[in-house]
Every structure is written in C-alpha cells, then in structure tokens.
Length: 136
Image (cartoon, rainbow, N blue to C red; front, side):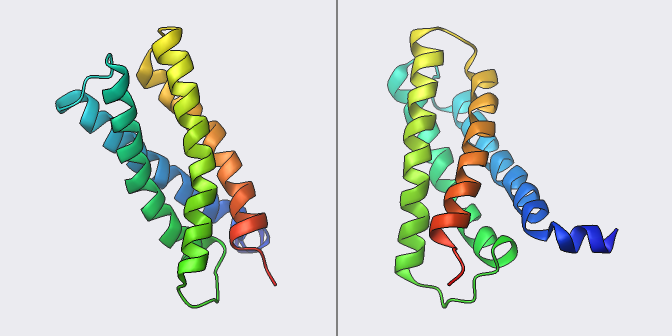
C-alpha cells in the first residue's frame, strides 16, 4: 500500500487537497447563498462564486505548493501570481458555465456548482503541473 501511495503520491495528494479545496469552495458558496446572497439574482450568484473562489484558491495555493507539487522554491510573488492567474482562467470558465446553466437555462445552481467543480479540478491540475509548479 505504501509503495502504491509513493508511486502515485502527487495525484493522490492532489485529489485529497482538491476535494478539500472543493469542499471549502462549496461551503463558502452555500453559506453565502443560504444566508446573505440570493442565487436567483445574477449579480449575487456571481459574487458568491467569486468569494468562494478567492477563499478556495488561497487554500489551494498553499496546500498544492507544500503537499502536492512539493515546491522547493522560496515563496515568491511570481509563483503565487502564476498560480492565481492559472486559476483565473478556470474561474472564468466556472463563471461562464454557472451563468449559462443557471441564469440562462435555469438549472439548479447547487447541482451545477458541483458538476462545474469537477471540470475545474481536472483543469487546475494540468495547469499547476505543467505551468505553475513545473520541475526545472
């Protein structure tokens, strides 16, 4: 079992922290939409989405850096900027899909948010591995 973990450590850790990041994103989104923001209003839906993104991406940066890709670089603004910018691309995808599927097509925002997060997790792994934390 340990050999299997060591062989696939990066992917396993990414999945673990990806799930935790997703839970943080969803918890933040749901907390906002069940309390102070109305997901039926397009602007408030996107505000909840952006706030949940900021909270979860900050968590993801530090956990991905330390536990997934085990970056040996000193904390740098360049690396953090690259990480956040790669996540901006998936945020835009997230926002676009939420707008299309919830606001335009009237699907359930809670269910759509979960489906969109799966797509975002996969794309974030690819961007982190090959752009942000690529080995030199």
